[in-house]
Image 1: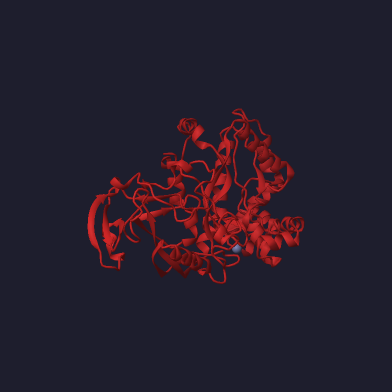
Image 2: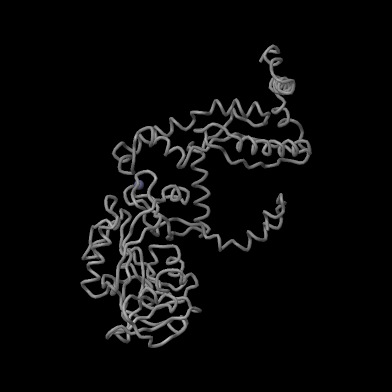
Length: 442
Ligand SMILES: [Zn+2]
């Protein structure tokens, strides 16, 4: 840049540009890497940015910190190699390319061709690299941008696989399930951020269903749910041990529910007994569907019983909660804790599995009419006298931000690192780390 242009700017900006020019011309950064380093090498870890967006204030602020520390360490006698990187993976790139190619779902991408899709992503990922080079140089950050690396380079990918393999050889990798939200149309899991993008108020069918006690078929647990389609996946019922429950008589039958929730009963009733939730724990009941009664699923011996759970409240429903470990966060946790069977009666495409004989192949929450399948289930339950009442509820429900299909809470299979196995070592090592500010490391 000529002195002429520099002089039209503020004196400070002009001075900065002259300093930058001096650094560049004299290779000052390179010289700091070549000078003697009596105290050895200081390793600086830097998370690379995405290059398919322009640098913003957050990047620049972090860049100042990422510049100051290596400079300080250099002045203290260390050699601090700094290599620039580009993050090329993940949703930001995929979303951009999907929009540009007008692809709305996983199927669209498969039809377009995964290889062609990847090629388009590869082509788009570095589109703002030149702007980055300009900005990072202008803020005076010392970093090697000529010898940069990209996370999409085979060498980098292999280093990630190496780390994964090393963890595997140490026995620290396992496959498990994690409750997430899936879009049955895109057949993919969504991140929490994506789920929060798509909440809409919708009307659902909520049902009050009756589960007969194992020991007395005329006494029922009264249970409320807004997701009738999850009922074939029922594995247990949950009560709050410190809540007071009531047993009431209506005609020839008796019902058990939280005393505070008796208002949900519209019939004339007679109070027969009161008991704590704790007294109900362990009580056996008969499931509403027999699809999995004799299935060889681990934990089946613990199924169809009442368990204690603190998350059960009396704010709504009946205080007796239907537990389907494959379809909800609390359900999943209780299932793990009590070793309940993991009954997954719905496939990743959102349709009932073949063993769900009466509803096989039906989408559990159709996009054009989310209540359609739930209404069929209500009809089925009503025919078999398992239904006490049903009503419409309006509530916020998450939808796919890509295709507006109602999402399903679904425990999907994933790979995990067994952090619990190395927790003690991690905590011990943490004490040797100089956290700034100290509260972060606590
Ligand atoms: Zn979708």
